Image (cartoon, rainbow, N blue to C red; front, side, top):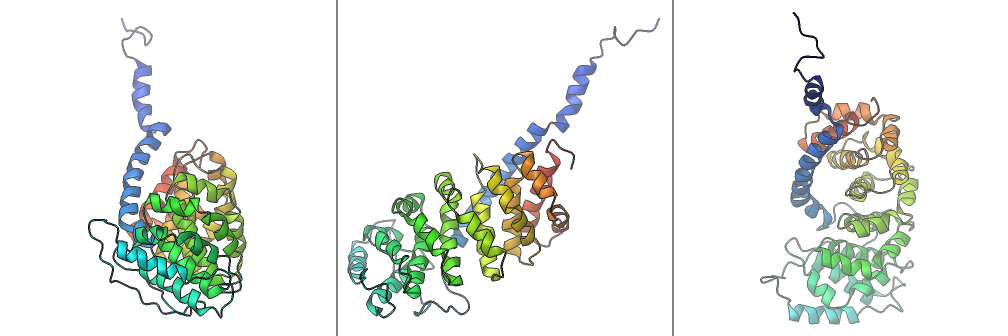
Length: 338
């Protein structure tokens, strides 16, 4: 006598559960997140900090009247504070006259700001701690507002870029000194090089902590960037923008979905640029925003991003293929059929 399926000991529900493990969306996301965490750490350790600091100017700069030389005579010992250098920086700070720095005829203030930039552009360990201890940071931030003297604005902004490449404590000093709103004002400058430098600082700050990232996301920055990127901009500005977007959208809790959706058309445009850094940072940015609600993924699917991503899976550089593959994985594990 044959045994009915109902009477058998074969547990179809158990068999189904084992089969569905491989299709479990939550588990798939968890595994990818673990792998992505490792990749992000490697990216941060090997690439992130290198790109945060600006060492030398490449190409022709129409704003800075100084040279691109750096000062590499500073040799820190075991992280100790160099008191002699602090005193020198204090003297340099006194040479900056905030009452006249708005005028490009004030060469004394300009050269002092230039010297701070040169020290902080050291290819080795820059004396960020000594610069902060000298008390010059609030003055450098005030120099950002000298609209009548774009050259000194540029030097101050460059110096602040490299301070923002320091430790979290040093970044905190910048943010608590009120740098973010001043940088947003600089982004409205008519000088493209100055806007680019200010954006670089903001990208550094956004990549340091969720608190500062959220402050920047809540500012008008995204709208300002979109307006500029819709017009004709240099490739270097696109590079810094892609870098900034990747920092703004990284980390959890994630930024509001409406902010992400605003940027989707711009990221789609970036994927059409033949530049490895832009492609890699753009793919990382897209990977962060597609690891969220389906509304963002839907917005991505309505663009040419999926088609271009499939092409990038065959890209010659691993730095581009890894984040591109992660985006594909994010899309495939959403609840909608894509």
